Each structure stands twice: as C-alpha cells, then as structure tokens.
Image (tube, rainbow over all chains, first blue to last red; front, top):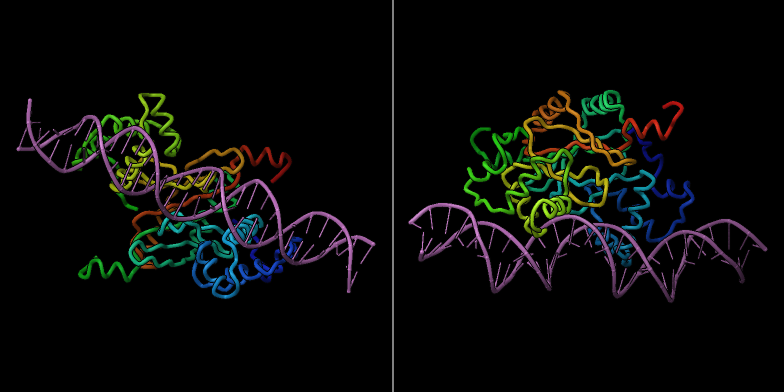
Length: 153
Length: 153
DNA sequence: TCTTAGTTGCAAATGATTTGCAAGTAAAAC
DNA sequence: GTTTTACTTGCAAATCATTTGCAACTAAGA
C-alpha cells in the first residue's frame, strides 16, 4: 500500500530502472499520465492511434505489464462496470476509493483517513503485510440517485 | 451493501422467487453453500462432477448469474490471485474484507466496524448510494511474511 | 397426464489479454 | 559514427474465462 509515488514522470521512472525507451512507450506513458479519466487498454490504443501512428494493442499491454511490474500504475476493475476489462491509473501516494455508478458509468474518487486507518488495522490485527489493495463501490451517484427517485430517498 | 442475508438456504431463496428447481441447480447450490473456501466456476464444475454426474460448465455459469441477479452470492476478484477468474460466496449480512496472499494463495477474511463506518461516510459525503462494494488486499499473510524475512520486519 | 415455458448440453462465439516469432531498433561498446 | 547485441515491435495465432444460439429435455402448473 505504502508504495512510493512516482517522483517525476513515468518516462524517467522507467529509464532510472534501466528500461529502454521507445517511441511507442513514450506515447503510452504520456497518455496514461495526462488522462483525467481511467483508461483501459483499448482506449489507450485508440487515443494513441489518434495522436500518432498506430501502436499495436499487444505493445500497449506489454507496456502496461511493465508499469505494473514496477508498481508505477495500479490496475483497477471499477466494479466491472463495462465488461471485464481493466483500467489503469498512475500509482499515487495516498490510496483512494473508487465509486462506480452503475447507471451513468461515472467514476468518482474519494479519500478518507478512515481508509488509511483501516489498512493499518488490517496490517496489525491480521499481521498481514499489504502490498496492494483496492476498495471499490458500485451503486448510484448523486445525480442518478435523484433521477431514479425524484421524490425522496 | 445492506443486502438481506439469505434466510434459509439458497434453494428456498430461489424457489421463493419463483425459480424452477433442477437437479443441476441443487448440486451447485449445495456446493457453494457448503464450501469453506471461495470457489470459481471451474472448481464448482469439478466438484459437481465428483459428487454427481457431470454438469455442463455453461449451466454452472448460468446458475451463478441467477444467484448474482438476486444478490444471493457475491462475486469476488480476490486480487486476481490466479488468472482473471471470479470467485463466489454466499452474500452475508455483514460485509467483510478479503486478504489474498500472493505467496501461498491463502484467502483470509476480516471484519471491522471501521469498514461499516467507511461505507456510511461514503454514502453521506459523496451522496452515493452503495449497492455493492468490495475491499480486497493483496500481500503477504503472517506465515509467508515470516518465511520471507526470517529476521525482522 | 398434458402442456408449456423454462432449462440443459453442446459447440461455437466472444472479449480481454497473452504469446511466438521474424524483423526492427535503442543504446552500449567499439 | 559504426557496429553489435539484446531488447522491442507488429502481426497473427493462441489462450483463458465466460457467454450464447439452438435443439432436445423437463419441472411444475393446469
């Protein structure tokens, strides 16, 4: 859990680890780093194609595997909101919660000290050494909640 | 989150909902209900084959879909500890945390009021209506932790 | 017992991801 | 700057988990 957050950017992180930099990798890294939404492999592939010459999907997957291996990105399921694909985000220092709306598909993030507390409790009481973790909720976001029941909760 | 826990057994739960009971379904329900470990579709299929005449894998999946639809079982990823398969467990009243050991594969469960608190906080502060949620951790269980670093932590 | 809608097994389809391999290329060594 | 070599790419085929279409079967209400 208490992963190091990337110091500068993914590109430098990889170079520091002796990983060869290629044009394809640079594109993928920029996209993951610059995106405000959570991307899956296919979205990355489409965005890459729009930004530059086509990158093969297999290369996208290989780059993601690389980033995962070094703990530079986190792999999310987002409650399997749309198929069984995975979504990726740059690993952050503070772990956070993902809320997925089953109605509109929006992903919301949330941070609370309670989560950190909970992680610590798990480590202590279960003597379990947490390497990664994910807390995801599926349900209705505030907007959709209102639409579903216009009267009251 | 605050799902009703099954009152009696899965069989009756389904019958109450007007679902036709078949021999194949009974086998699958018994297996899920009677198992102490978290089963995936293929394990269910193998266990069913050992217990009775073969049940088709597709039937297993269809039964699981049925149970999911009524909120009678929860689908887990268990940190993708082994492939991308899903694991199933009978829905319980109290939601709990799953700890998956990356080294030995053991799955541990843990319950804490902190989690309930956290859920409430999410519902209030994000005005998000939680339907399901899952909190999973991957790391090292106490035994494997000791094996990895025999000296200290 | 009849009837019928719901269920099964099978094989083929699907979606997401991985892999083998020959050709291409980054970057270390000269 | 060229050579060298190990690493990387694209492509197509393979794989894994799961779903689907369909004809034959069957639970359970009439």
